[in-house]
Image 1 (spheres, rainbow, N blue to C red):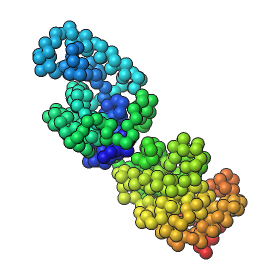
Image 2: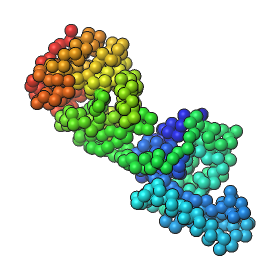
Image 3: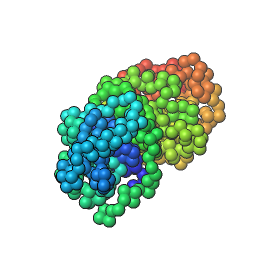
Image 4: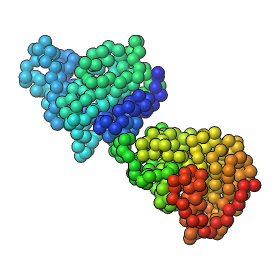
Length: 445
């Protein structure tokens, strides 16, 4: 402690809760601050994300003291002890309930729109907040979740006061808390960045594609969000049946997971029995800023994080790992492979391996450099970089191709070169293929 921000807290909390993956759970964030934490937990355990909306019913004379709480779909939780002690009559209770339910319905529409809440009947509900001070809201949320039919209720928070944890433990099935300092006065003291969470941020998190449950076996072909970067990195994961290896793509400037060129190469690899993960290593804002596009160290760190995330997906578990980099992504692939024994093969397409600098000498994975015959400047840079590689390597020149391999047949030649290289060096399980046409290979100098 302290946590960097809510997302950092959520990632740490998600790692603690990894054992829950695959148990039919729903992760529920308390708006607003609990939702960024809950989003990371949901990603870590492969569970759908929703919000749990509650409104405390405070005594008219002491609003801070809850005489009950209301939730969606007409759920009401009553604290009989408080009602009896305060002698609250039915009309007073109904008036407070009506007012708070109107606000709850307004918040539900603002955050969900027309989307229905996720059903909790018979499931494990994990209620997440950014921290617990008094515990009143968390207790109300857990009670509402139980009333919605959850078979098991888990409260998960990064930080909480010891007293609040003691009081809430009897009303839930499990409590997961990372920090519980004795001198605890406010949730914000546990965070370096505790800026308020806005409705727009909550909406964006709720609208992300639901992660595929982590115990789902292959094959797979779906959009994913890899646990890397500031807010997770969007990608597309394809795992054919009986995959023999995983190739993670590192895109260059102006490219991405939707690029027709990248998808065309990926399809060739998939037909050869290789899983592919196309992921955007930079956010749109970072792409627009241009500086991060050439930050090879940043790109390499994120590529490594993406690969580690993929290794935790059951459909990809134990698959040999390879990188395919293009443009500056080629340098990132080589920098990420340097000194990493888990990387078994690297292919660079029209890349700038020279930007990897001193890391080139530390690459041990067999490396293929593919360059267009008409791309003279990049060809010379690749030749120079090749002299610094100490691993098994080859420079392949595709005749008649420019930098982007837009000429007829040239991109197919690149894909076949990559397929053959990965089939040879990444895994023996890939389907053998005949030699590609239109290529000229230059052995390592």
